[in-house]
Image (cartoon, rainbow, N blue to C red; front, side):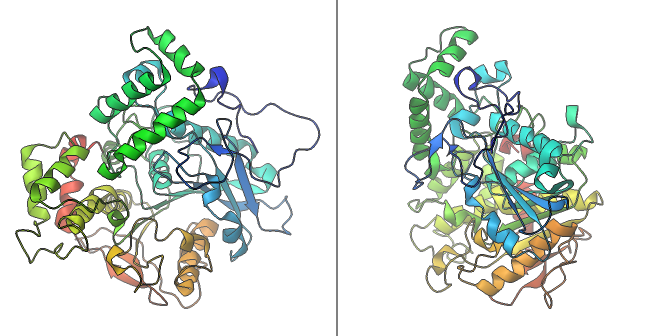
Length: 498
């Protein structure tokens, strides 16, 4: 089902303004619609289209529409450049639920169509269009979710990776026009946050290169006035835009300084996440935040061998880091080529692989998750943090990968095909309970550990550790404290684009 007038033709590169036009008769809502334009290298047989702003509703069968159900609204991941609403198995989540529930998934504009950070778009007020799509849809649900049997007062907003970053942006945006008007009741941030990775402003060197390249590829002159440039981009071939967006991402993905990202200073990121946390301008709503043991091993390049390679890699991602910052990173992550006792020695491929993976994991996911939990718990918000330590493959098969980013994905909806089905039942039970009640314990699987709230007192906060099989336990959140103190330092946040 559509949720907006589609951003095609002259509506390309504009914020959404109107909900879909009314229609008479019946439309077939039993099959998926098109996903948003993205790189064709990814193995998606799904039909792609620029007119892609649609959503899906899954609901416990046999439950009358008059019963308004707690609803999980899921924002899909994919680095803001790919994937779709279909990637979350809402039907399985509903089928396993302890009581009737609804799940809603939706598409939003991706890559250059939704995130084109540039001076031109900054002047035109067109930054972060994909985030604006999300906000438009959440407002749409407040008006219409009850028509689909959901309760707009019991929405859990959640997502994985870019979906979790997005959820964090909405959660940490309790200021401006929408102040004290949350469009959801609670939040689940799965490997992501408002301070995850890096989200630079439009002056970031990578973004300048990407915009210039896109203008050249589409035949649009950067020398015209703003109206002329926008007219050219709106009239350009969608295939040309998709083609260049995919190429730019492929060229950058191993360097981890990705194009087509949300931009600090634009809508929904007028404040950086760290600043909003410091100012307490976030929605004080119950929150779950999670991370995997080895987030970065999914992304980290395996061809860097020297200490110089390591330093240059980190500096390329965050070019505003100064000499002192880089020296501290060197100290916090000892070089395994010079120190055989380094925790990151013994890499399976290149000398620096484990080291870079650890540093980028901490910078992008693990420490931001801790920062979110500390910020919200100190404000008195019911907060729970989870460490996912179960692989998405049999443990003996690829042990060198550890527990990389998105290992928990299929476990979230209790997929029976995962390597450890018992873990899926346990993990799902906590998430399902949170969606149903706002507390992960009230309807958790019988016989499982009670998940304590994250209370940041004297550095002894407790979190849930999800291990393979029936071995989920409570642990103290005490690892990598020095590293997280570095990455979460508010004084350093501007240099890290957080």
